[in-house]
Amino acid sequence: GNVIDRGQDSSGDGRWSHFTMQGKSQAKVTFITAYRVCQQGTPKGKKTALAQQWSQQQARGNKHPNPKQTCLDDLSVFVKSKQDSGHSIVLMLDANESLTKTNSKLSDFAQELGLIDPIGTSHGYEDIPATYKRGTQCIDYAFVPPDLTPFIVNSGIAPIGKGKPTAYHRLLFLDISL
Image 1 (spheres, one colour):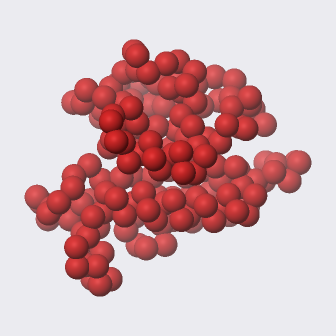
Image 2 (cartoon, helix red, strand yellow):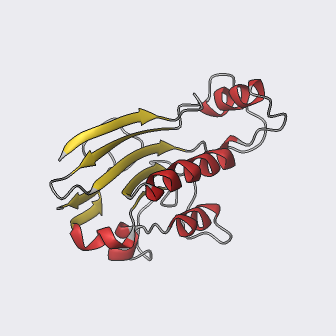
């Protein structure tokens, strides 16, 4: 396929980037990589992503920013706009939240968009490893619509350091054959 579009989070908060590919069948798939801050509440440092997003959102008139939730809200609007235009979505997200925790906002987000976690669905959640080096839970995900799952020929989570020796997160992969 050919890349027909590319871009980034239009708010300027730097939360995601994307590109869209169009295949021979004219099908469009938009790939999104996103980062959702881990903290909630008032920023603890001046140079963290939370502090940067907090100050940018305040500058835009939001008196009580919540960058962690705003990321999901804004990302949802973006994904829905692509879905409404007939695009399939592959969303790779450092969510900083477990999909399986009780009252997971991440789970609500995925369900609202009709996206599933093919790695967890395929391999199970019982033994899914922590995806952050100092963490205890899976907080990184690749989401797709259910109709894309028949085209996933392989998926998984690599050991810490595989692919990039200095990485703090595990590499997730989907091998998609369209």
